[in-house]
Each structure stands twice: as structure tokens, then as C-alpha cells.
Amino acid sequence: MADAIARSVHDGDIVAIEGFTHLISFAAGHEIIRQGKRDLTLARLTPDLIYDQMIAAGVARKLIFSWLGNPGVGSLHAIRRLTEGDVPSLELEEYSHFGMVGRYTAGAMNLPFFPLRSYFETDLPAANPLIRQVRSPYGDDVVYAVPPLKPDISIIHAQWADAQGNTQIWGLLGCQKEAAFAAERVIVVVEELVSEEVIRADPNRTVIPGLIVDAVVVEPFGAHPSYAQGLYDRDNRFYIEWDAISRDAGSLEAWLNEWVHGVSDRAGYLDKLGLEHLAALRPDPAPSGSVNYGDYR
Amino acid sequence: MSASDPARATGFSASEMMIVAAARELAGRRVCFVGVGLPNIAVNLAKLTVAPDLELVYEAGVFGARPARLPLSIGDPTIVTRATAVTSMFELFGFYLQGGLIDVGFLGAAQIDRFGNINTTVIGDYPTPNTRLPGSGGACEIAINAREVFVIMRQSRRSFVKHIDFRTSPGNLNGADGARIRREQGWLGSGPSVVVTDVGVYHFGEDGEMRLDSLHAGLTLGQVHQQMAWQPAVAERLAETAPPTAEELRTIREVLDPEGIYTR
Image (cartoon, rainbow over all chains, first blue to last red; front, side, top):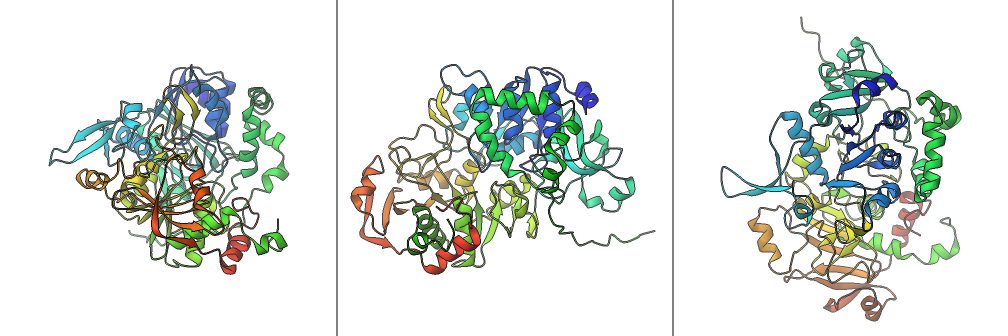
């Protein structure tokens, strides 16, 4: 992980660590903090705890997003501290969820904009002048448009990939695929490295081809306190605890010192968390059925 | 507090009344976009009572969810296991919502005005807010493209305001003209149809304005006025919301929210 981040993430980059509640690479976010990256523009639909931590640690100057909260709990207090009052110190660029999905999609498809039926009669286009109206070339329809988003680097967590980076995901897909195809560089972080045969046995489940992947990093439990469908549950207790930790700048800094700066890598974080804690997050199995692709020769 | 607690068994909380009233409004609806918290419990209660064919849709990319536990977040793994379909967010917002398949979208609000316009973005000025709220998420496009919108929220002078500080999700705009503007601009949705609060149930008249149609048991109009910043229209025959039935309360307390996280 340290090598992949050192090589692929540069000061000033647009960085997207995507994953809608599911499969958020906290492992990569923490490594970016440890390496002291600066002036990043962070993009995510839902900044979640990982961007609250990264922004509190001082890696970012700007945030591109669509929903700014601790899902099911409340606020992201570090980000609120930097965006409320007379002199906000974090630049915000704000969309709706579909607007963000459309931005990645336009980026991935090499289009100049993505049209959508949203934003009508709201204050969002005034708050963000990059949300603009466009008239249909085929009639009088007027819709809104959002510009392409092409991250310098997208970091995608997944259940597994092969050594070439062919990546399979099940459960919530969010916009992992769109963010990966839109990016200049892609790091895939997986729970498990599998053989090419495993990938080829179920090609419908491949979300990201190795063709666009620059590095594959293996980090079991690398999404904790987010989750990996079928492997471990969301650590909701931590999401609730973060509310108290992050309300105070001092306790947040102490947490970063203990859990990010105080360990050298993800293995150190997991050691600190303890096997018992992790084992309690394992769900009972609910396997998929299997399908027959047919052997055609 | 357990279900066998005598105080809880004989009475009910304001949240339980809200959930029950919202669930009853879903009778006959088929496809519903669900939010976390109170909407989630209301929609699941409706499915177990007045709307057994209801399809639960979550913005995270799930159609036909069968959650086996109460999800804390909108993206809980329990909404995936045994669902009808898991989709990318592109498909969910593009094909299901913008394609016109969603009957009801459930929204919450920090501020709402008499025409059902909603603010979830900031309190104060946008560039230098007093309070930075979460923002739109999917709410803006849900308000425009869901066939109708249900709002469930607690009512107070701070939340039921004359002028919202920021319009995140459009309701009936400035009133009677709202329907025309929606039509002319090609919106799929007809806007907010129901607002359920801890005080009563509101629907919207031809003039696009919120009208109190039902007052929850034991409350007075005077209390309603104290908890909002404008004088609301009131139905000629103001009803009293029927209190939760024993079966509705049992379902909430034993099945949907046994720990009382959202319903106390």
C-alpha cells in the first residue's frame, strides 16, 4: 500500500476513494494521511468518516461531494468546523447524487457533459455555477448538465481481483466502475487475491478490467469500519463513536495519532483492533446460486 | 425499554404516531424510495400492513429489498441479501427514478415552507453558513422525478418556516403555479402530496399549499400554531388521526425497531 500511494498519489491531485457505504478504502485513506500528502481535491458522493479523517489531518484543500454526513448518525464534525462561519477554510463543490454519478460517467465516456433531469427551480445551480442548463438539439427540452469529473487517481476497494487487476465486486456497486473508468490512474485494494481462473469462471461479476488498473494491493479488512458484503459487517458502533470523537478537534487529533500515525500500516491497525473485534463482524453465510455459462468449443 | 414495559404498552410515542400515520398513507402504492430512520420503519410497516406488494427501493442501488434487520445506514448489507435486484447507482437514478418507475419518494427536511419546498443544505448564507447540513444526496432528483413525495419530519418553528434558507428540493414552488412549471419543464413528479409530523397529517390543496387534514389524538390547533411559523390552512372537517392499533404497535416494537432506536 505504501508503495502504491507513494507512486500514484501526488500533492494537488484530484483523488476519488469511492464506495457507497460499502467497500470504502479506509486503508488507503490512512496511508495518504501517513504520507503527509497536501492540497488534494477529494471527490466522493458521500465523504463519510474517511474524508472527515483525511480533511482533519490536513491533506485536502477542496471537497467535491453530494451528501455530507455520517450515515445514520449525524454530522461530519471536522468538515463542519472548516465550512461553517465567516471564514470557511475548505472549498466545497456540491452536486446531487445523480449529478456526481453523471460527472464520473461523462469522465469515463470522454463526453463534454452529462445531461440530467434534476436541479430545476433549486438554489443548487446558483451555489455551484458548474451546474448549467442545456437545450436539447432535438426539441425545446431544457435539462441541466454537469461537467465530466476525471480524477487523477481513483482508489477502489473490492472483494477480490487477480494479479492483473481484473476486479470483481458483489453487493452495493455504488459508482466504483464509473469512478475507475474516469480516472487517469486506478489503485484496486482487495480483500483477497485470486487466480485468473476464478475471475474467468464468472465474468459477469467483473466490474473493473485489469486493463485500467495500475496497482493491486491486498488488504484484508481494508475497508473497516466500512464493510465488504459477505465478508464482514459495517462496524456501526464505530460510526456512532466517531460522532463523539470528532466533535472535539483535540480528541479527533488524539484518535488520528493513535490509530493512523501510531501504526505503520494496516496490519498494525488490525492488530490494535484485535481478532475478537474483527471476528464479531463476520456474517453467517448466504451464498449465491451458481449459473451455467456453457462450454462452447 | 422493552415491549413488555407497561408504560409503553398502554401509550405510544410521538414517533410511533408519525410512523403509523405515514405507513397508512402508503396504502395502494407500489414502488417506494426509502430513506433511513423513520421512513424506513414507516415503509416496512406499510409493507406488513396496508401495502403488502410495496417494492422497497434504496438509493444505494437496491430494488425490491427485504431487510432482515433495521439498517442504521442507507447502504447496510442487509438491504442487499435476498433483494430482487442490485444495480449501479447510475441505473438506479437513471433507469428507475428518472425513467419514471418510482411512485413515492420519502424525504426528510431541516426546513420546509408552506408549499413543501425543502432545505437540507445550509442554515444561514450559503458561502458562510451558520450550520452546514448534509446537502441534497438524491433528494433533489427524487423531488423532481418521483411521482409523488412524502415528507416525514418533526414540526417546530425552526423547521416549519415562512422562508427556507436554501431550496435543495423543490416542492410546489410558489404555489398554484407550481403544477404548471413542473409540467412545462418536463418533470415526472407531481410534487409533495403528504407531510406527516408529530402533530398531524397535511395534504396539499389546488393552490399548492399545505393543509392540515388530521390532528393526532390529544393535540389542539393551538399547539399546531405554536409549532410552525405561518398560519396553516385547516380542513373544513379536521379529522383526528386514529391512534396506532395494537397490531401496528406490536409490529413496530417487536419486529421493526425492537431496541426503540427511532421510536421512543
